[in-house]
Amino acid sequence: MQDFVFTILGLAILILGGNWLLKSAVALSLRLNISKIIIGMTVVSFATSAPELIVSVNAALDGFPDLALGNVIGSNIANLGLVLAITIILGSIDVRPSFYTTDWPVMMVASLLFFGFIFFDAEIQRHEGVIMFIFLFIFLIYLLRFQKTAVVEEPHEDYILLPLYKAVLFFVLGAAALWGGSELLVQGAVGIATSYGISERVIGITVISIGTSIPELAASVIAILKKEKAISVGNLIGSNIFNLLAVLGITSMITPIKVLDQGLLSNDIFWMLGISFVILPLVFLPRGLRLGWRDGIVLIGLYGVFVYLTLG
Image 1 (cartoon, helix red, strand yellow):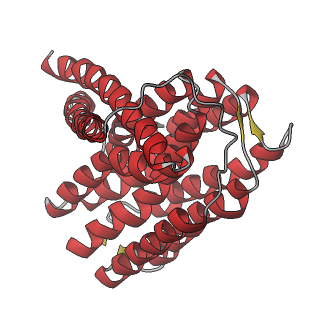
Image 2 (tube, helix red, strand yellow; image 1 turned 45 degrees about the vertical axis):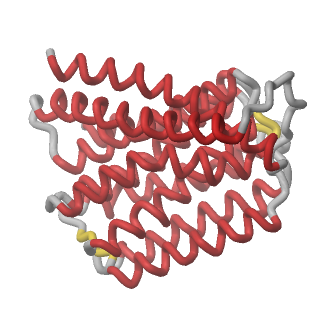
């Protein structure tokens, strides 16, 4: 009973945190005159990736590397196959060329870099983690200095410009709520899953990854409902980049991550690469430079197949 209470309470706190984080992101973009997709890919992405970082570092230090890897791989799959799918089913998103010239390619390069580091020796070593983190740093510098908006941003509604201290306060409260809510959700979900004797890898790739992707879902759905589509897309692409380069980079710098369950390398990592790749053709088909409800159905269908095969 306690596990179910933790799960429901965690979800409620996450929704509240997503709303606070969105207020902060909008306020910062207005006050600093920064494109909202850049705010989404940096500030919001870092906050919503915090649960993955905390879970992965703790799991690796406690001797559960498959939980750390499964969490990140599963979260990246869930961010696109579940969160993006739900987001674009709720409302279509028009994108601009910089989406496929910068944002998507960086996500794919990060994914392939991770694949290259782990596939051949089944381990991410400390120096490889340093390389991943440096790549993230270079990308962020480019993003802040040169990136143009990748999503067609709708005109601002009549927002009340928040004082800087209130924007920062909402960010801190939102990030804390997302972290705390995720902790409760993961604790409850793991308690429920382990009672059925599910393996560490499967728990990481499904239950925990979905739990730690709930912040992205909360922030993105709230953003799309409030017509902040740029924050929504930027958050998801940015979160996948952060999950690979920051979460696994930092975790492996603290302690090397070794694969124990080969299912991560023979199955899960290829699903992550595949669902990341398929975003590009979906942007162009059936209508150019747009993601709509049909694309959402395709993505959520792929995610359903992935979960079915993983649990099966």
